[in-house]
Each structure stands twice: as C-alpha cells, then as structure tokens.
Image 1 (tube, rainbow, N blue to C red):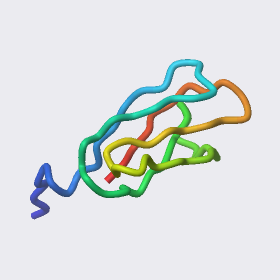
Image 2 (image 1 turned 60 degrees about the horizontal axis):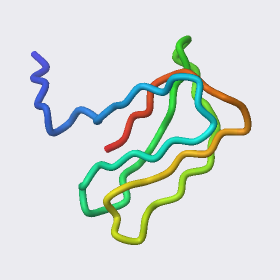
Image 3 (image 1 turned 120 degrees about the vertical axis):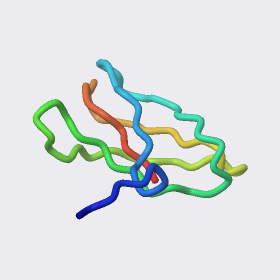
Image 4 (image 1 turned 30 degrees about the horizontal axis):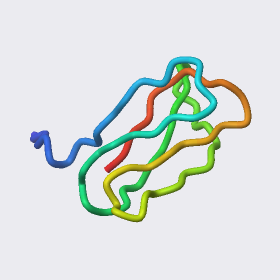
Length: 71
C-alpha cells in the first residue's frame, strides 16, 4: 500500500497564456521547478531564483498555458 504524504507532493500553480511569471513560495531555498503543458508535456523555460530564495521567475519564448510544479 502506498501512503501519500503532503510533504512529498510538489506545490503547483497554473499558467494562463503568459511569457513571464513570478511565483512567491516563501520556502527559503531554491526549489526544483518543472512546467507541464495541458497535454502533460514538459515545457522549456528560463528560471531565475530571487536572492532571498523565496520566489522565482519563469521566462518563456512564447506565451504558455500549463502548470508549474516545484518542490
């Protein structure tokens, strides 16, 4: 039996037609970040972490819809 514990699941946020988005997570570290489109395909983007390690900014070449996951 597999037990799912919230601490093991990534946080997520939806993207809606954006080329840039800043996500404030207040985790105090640089999380791993990945972005999937509506078809669950991995999207490529630039990720810049803030110097205080509490947010990151995503930059896409074209406007994207999908979900950002981070842990």
